[in-house]
Picture 1: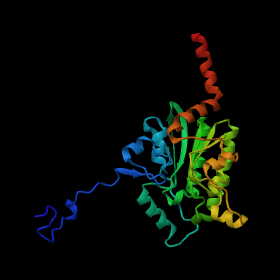
Picture 2 (picture 1 turned 30 degrees about the vertical axis):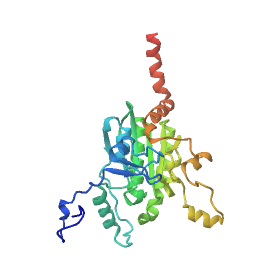
Picture 3 (picture 1 turned 90 degrees about the vertical axis):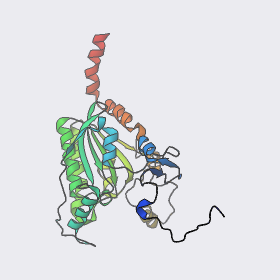
Picture 4 (picture 1 turned 90 degrees about the horizontal axis):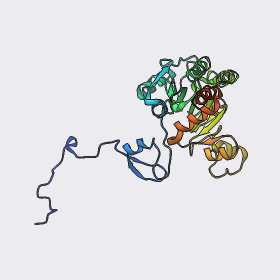
Length: 295
């Protein structure tokens, strides 16, 4: 008798008894298709060990990467959107916001917090793409403006992590006004001499790129990030020409002078600490007398 001949027919294993690999154990790189465990992927801060592709991550992961021991105090955590225009597309805007809140556990597309990074105080505003495409509405602009005010009043460096599809159409002109509001607040931060670093991640587009994302004392980006104002298709149709290779990638933007440098996520915390140390001469001056006294 063959080893592989089924004697009884109609044998069916109940679904709950099937031995299947649980979800969330493995990661497959979308670029090079390399497979790794999720534990290894997380250890590498959500970058590919083979091709260094940087996966999109959200504020929770960035806060864990940057804040010492993941300890921070969140600012304006409960601020939520209104519906000043009574906007309706396939569903009323309040219903869309409520559904997104339930699905993501977030109140809007940005979270702001302060804590310590490499022992130094830092205020961070980080956008979440999973909340309506990281779109910039009134709450996003208000929370960023308040975070800038906090950084200015307490003279703490400010880091903006951008990840957005642009302005939120459901708030129309209210959304576009956030470009002016955040830019004005950053001007006050600059006048106060408080450092501002802008980190552009994949994707940073639309009104976000046209305002606070490009106004840093240093504008830096992650490798391979999409950075632009209008989309490539719109630009191509407007100018009637084919676009260059890797158009709107962070490498292309750096080559054309709109970025200061590109930083690997695994090096981000240390690079940021080094950069902020250079931008805060007062901190250096406080150290010099101690060093001189020891000599």
